[in-house]
Amino acid sequence: MAEERMLITGGQRLEGVVRVSGGKNTAVAVISASILSQTPCVIENLPNIEDVNVSVETLEHLGAKVQWCPEQGMMEVDASSIHRTDVPLDLCRRMRASSYYIGALLARFGQAQVPLPGGCDIGRRPIDQHIKGMRALGAHVETARGMVSAQADRLVGGDVFMDMVTVGGTINVMLAASRAEGTTTIYNAAKEPHIVDLANFLNSMGCRVKGAGTDVIRIRGVSSLSSRRPYAVIPDQIETGTLMIAAAATHGDVTICGCIPTHMEALTAKLLEMGARVDERDDAIRVRSIGAHRAVTFKTQVYPGFPTDLQQPMSALLCTATGTSTVVENIFESRFRHLAEMERMGARVRIYEQTAVIEGVPLLHAAAVEATDLRAGAALVIAGLMAQGTTEIYNTHFIDRGYEHLEDKLNSLGAKIWRIRD
Image (cartoon, rainbow, N blue to C red; front, side):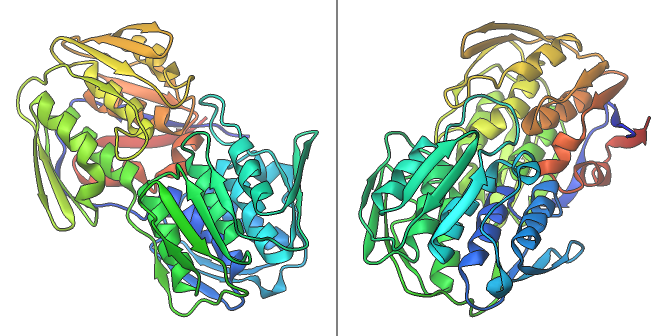
């Protein structure tokens, strides 16, 4: 099979206007939730990315009828023809969010057989809290030989106390609780924007979800859900942040349209601290940067703290900041592997367990580097934009998992990026 490489000629200042795509994390949750509807669902503003394509394959495997128009970002899902409740291993290996089909299938059909999910290798991501939540609703759940098997004659609402904040666990319990009898209360729930968007989608189909965006979510289950109107997913928070960082990294002047500025407050604060200028209006953010950036310190945290998914792109920017920056990764233990690739480009980095100390250098130099996961790929793109010479990035399939035509958007702003097949 031919391998694709991305080539980036650095040193180009980004300038202009770009529109952000629909959210990856929202898309995979809402597509999974479409299984719950008794009538066809129309979902809009979906990004044309690999995770969405895998979601389509999963729905079709289950027996759903799917019409997917990538150019328009629109999908219609008719789940009335679903005739099986198992998800194959080859699909689960390609997408972390495959675990959401446990909650959705359990709620709709009373059973699910889903292998443990795959996705990017960024550290341990157990689903014990997912399982705990479903058992609290009365499901019988077993894990054996890499397979999660869930069964319930009936689901009954109850209290679910999450031992730790988990986005996936919160989503899965919300899906399972949507058709449970009575009210389910999730304590220590995740507060990310895509949690709120999923709640809005469920409510649009007749469910009653309150408290999304806080750490206590209440779901009053209903006997059936039906889609009533097309639903548009929110803009991608992480793509917005990646484009903001790219603008600062190239000392550019970029306006990102179609985004939600309030979702970006943690990143905006750090860019301002570094010396960049960030201006916001209702649905747009303008990032300008002239001169050297200052080193900063930050820690990844659950929302509304600094997102772990932007740690890698941000640490690329810090490689040329004046002074010494410190980055603490509190979410995933294997999310510094991209820094070893950046050392090939001249970065100066020391790693102490979950802390990276980055000593800024005047300039990065092009090299052949390898993306080890989705956001590491985005970080290497940022580094390539800053570097002198032409950087080659291998494993571009990771980037395609979560970014819709990233190089096309950057090229429209003045970057020089292209792909070749070996």
